[in-house]
Image (tube, rainbow, N blue to C red; front, side):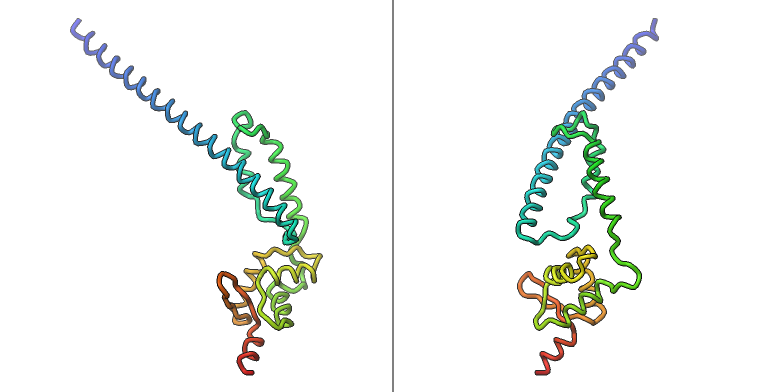
Length: 191
């Protein structure tokens, strides 16, 4: 009978540890659920804000052909629909995201033989008398080439590539950045 008391104390110790671990696990689950709910509410607010900003952009007439990438938005479909607080199902979101991706693939950015964005931007700037911002160049290229979807970030990258290659000169005025062809800058400084 001397073996029974140690076995009972070991069993009681394990039972207490399991109870403590279970309690810690449940409180951690509750903390994560609370954080998840907060993050989902924040995501909903951000999505609503994006919709408002997109509508404002459309009203101002500065909407690019393709809006900013929504790659991260499709990650919300990983949360089961039963846990979503806003009531939208994962299937509905996935269908919207699929439609968006299909439209991006349908428009090819450049066909063989077409000039690059750098060539188009440099040609546009060469005909200008004053420096232009990436947004201004993008708007002009959208107007001149409606068959090619133009994004301001792509044009900005092309302009920066032109600066790196020595074709363009970048100048800053406050927080704004303007671009000029090298020929126009040297002609202005020679006058």
